[in-house]
Amino acid sequence: MSDSSHNTPLATKTMYDIAEFILRAASSIKADQVEKMVSELEDFYKNHHDRKVLVMGAGRSGLVGRAFAMRLLHLGYNAYVLGETIVPAIGDRDLVVAISGSGRTKLIYTAAEAAKEAKAKLIAITSYADSPLARVADVVVEIPGRTKYSKGEDYFTRQILGITEPLAPLGTLFEDTTQIFLDGIVADLMIRLKKTEEDLRLVHANIEL
Image 1 (tube, rainbow, N blue to C red):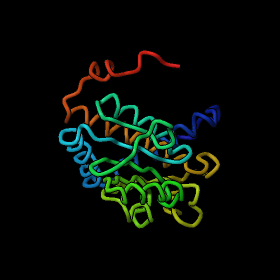
Image 2 (image 1 turned 90 degrees about the vertical axis):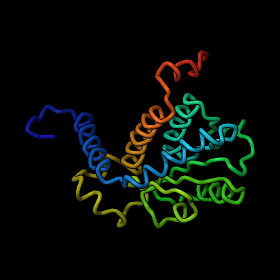
Image 3 (image 1 turned 90 degrees about the horizontal axis):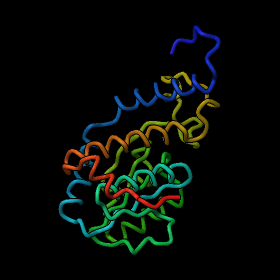
């Protein structure tokens, strides 16, 4: 965005900066990683439809995970979110999607290890392919983004964006990018599973708070 106008509100400028980061991130996400994730979800739906999908993340990553789990439910998956009281036991042939920018958030890494011990398949969404979470995962998708642990770790990300840290504090860039990425995954799944918007609408809650 050009800064020629001094009347642009900082909130609006930040929206442009974050959107620019997401566009750059989209071009750097590895196509083979995305294909592995989508194929895993497609195969799961077609061959293990009676099994469970558990989505998990801490803090704002957890909120992103909730939004994704909601769409998986609309698509016809038996989806749950870690932390809810109604989450059933996870076991063999179940699928877990773990979201952590750093890949070392203790709660999520511990839960991921437990899922693997229960013989569930694990998809990790993280900024670090060498993180503890990524190392235990069956499928890893690297999503660029500054995390709350970023000091000294992702200087390159901040440099190519040119964004000052206060405009996107803590894990904002990772969380926003992951949210858009997962919406893209949903769009891909709609096509592969031959789902229409009407199909999703029929599953959408008709009693809401």
